[in-house]
Length: 94
Image 1 (cartoon, rainbow, N blue to C red):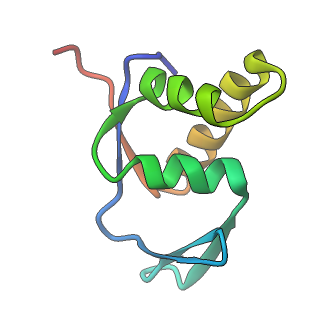
Image 2 (tube, rainbow, N blue to C red):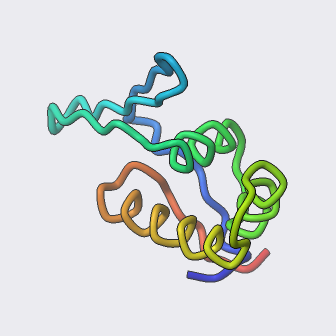
């Protein structure tokens, strides 16, 4: 995945935040996903379309620890979300 890929939430996914946790519901599949703190932060950042680079930059400000791990965690999470069709990736150059 490229840093400049544009990412948005899939419109068919319903979600709710409960006590610092974000829950995603896929109505068509009747599946519930509970996101960890990193995933919840990423999901909330996707209130508008963002690039992977923008997400990583924002999370580096929010979380302490190994900053290279932030990038790895974000890419791993985004790949999972893409596979589950919970997000939409637009890799077209602008």
